[in-house]
Amino acid sequence: MDRPRRPLQLIRSARAVGAKALRGSTGFRHGVHPPDSKRLTERVPIRRMPFPGEIVLPLRQHAGKPAIPMVKSGDRVERGDKIAAADGFVSAPVHASATGVVSGVGLAPHPDGSFSPAIRIAVERFSPQIPRPRLVPRWEGLTPQEVVLAVQEAGVVGLGGAAFPTHVKLRPPPDAKVELLVVNGAECEPYLTTDHRTMVEHPDRVWFGVRIMLHCLGAGRAVIGVERNKPDAISALEAARPSDLDARVMPLTVKYPQGAEKMLIRAITGREVPSGKLPVNVGVVVQNAGSIATIAEVFQTGLPLVERIVTVTGPGVRRPSNLVVPVGTKLRDVLEFCGGLADDATEILFGGPMMGLPQSDLDVPILKGTTGVVALTRAETNRGTVYPCIHCGHCLDACPVFLDPQRLAALAQAGNYEEMEALHLADCMLCGSCSYVCPSNIPLSQMFALGKAAVRRVSPTRAA
Image (cartoon, rainbow, N blue to C red; front, top):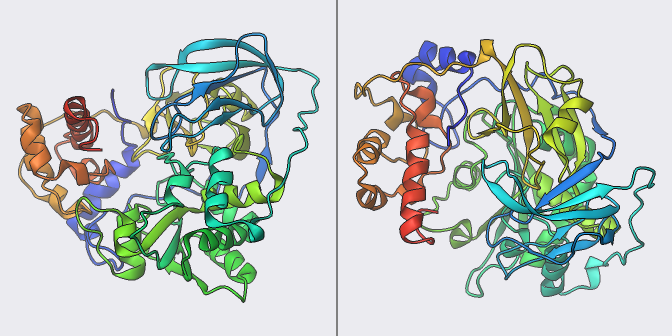
């Protein structure tokens, strides 16, 4: 699958500043400085979009095993009802995001470009969409195991893009000692402002989620890391910070990919997560700010994860917005609510321009992990001619995990995936930093994604 084209402004920026932009920043070494392009929505308040006529809920919208359907065509469901069960521990249930009638269980377009099993719901046109009364769990009286179960039953996953089931992070290995909770408020991907607006408008909810996670993990301290280009978020969180928690807000240098777990841990604690290890191996658990706020909502309302905040932005959309969107809403309905596409819109991404996926079908649904919808025009996109590698070393200076992208690219072109794996391909985050700085326009990140897929075909547990 093609990865998104890079906006011309990003390409010009990289070539104008050269290797100088890759150094001289505190926090973590290497990385890049793309324009943040957040001005379109960074000051736009969150609002709720109306319920669409149809909801499409894929069974595979989280890391791990897909959920198992519990309903059939003709069943009536209400908002918040469980319609698909988790298939094992590393899985998450799926809940109806609107009241209506199940119109089918079958294949539907998926944002990753495939057709995936999904449950379709014909939304009741005049329903008030009030969920059934639910028992709101009082977290103070729950054991950590009961908190984990409540989060799992609510179908909460990471809302930063990876969609890893949150309850798995809340249950670290028995021999692991979690000392610190790091809340990821960096939101370093250009254009996206969902976490930003969440921290500005709902700081109390974020801190409530921090309190619950500290209780569950047994950790003593928490740090919320926020890049300095979000001063209003930093101020809001500081003003709402509970005095009884050992917690602080840490302003971070603006640099991509600051929001990656290993980079964030390095910037905040100075600790290095070893190759092949997880944050918990250095006593840290990282959770996205939006996910933290969703955990709080579960214990405030009892409602599972049935909606999320999505940034709809870019020069290709007529009315950029931050929206509360029911999970399963089709892309075309979201764009229509935002005034539609500009006449010269040429590309739509789920996510940002560095790591986002280009979409070819307006009927793909918003997933739990969909952070944003970015519409670009012809002026911002450029496929570019791919030239041979000139061995300039810019990709080496950009890679935040110290891989050798030019060597990996040569191996990928030769189909030597075993040697790619030996050179720590699994450590690659597909952040796109190497592709961003390459003067030859070599699609390095895309080549590494294909290499990871080839390794997984041999062994599903490798090169994840």
